[in-house]
Structures are given as structure tokens and as C-alpha cells.
Length: 96
Image (cartoon, rainbow, N blue to C red):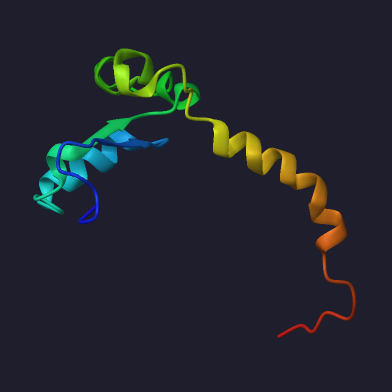
């Protein structure tokens, strides 16, 4: 954050972004950068949150997010799961 210009905003799109936002405020974590942070909850998870949370943290309610749904990382890991069988270690397992 020290390397970014002061007028830049950093978006944090996280499944529980609302809780992260409140925690950072409560514990006064990174107060010098807090004005640059914008929080949102990924679209899939937003509907599981309370109505007030959806109003404040839904990515469609803020210009910063554009049409991002916040699920890009989920899709990436979903594609990688096809590689898991080929990466498993075979051999003797030792019980401890």
C-alpha cells in the first residue's frame, strides 16, 4: 500500500468482505490506508447475507467493480480440480 498513489482505491472482493471491513474498523487496523480500501461481497455469497449487508456490500452497488461477480478465483480452482488425481502421491502411507 505504501507504493500506491494516495488517490488510488484498492478493492477487496471477498466472501465475507463485510465482516473484514467491520473487523478492520473495530481494531483500527491500517488506519493510514483505510480510506483507500473498498469492500464488497462476491455475488454468490451476497444473497446469503442480511439485507443491510447486501445493500452496502453487493458489487453491483458500487462503480468500482464493474460487472465482476467476485467468483473468478472460484472458477479458476474449479478448473484446476481436474489435475488433482494426476498430482496425488502414490506409495505407502505411514500411520502415525
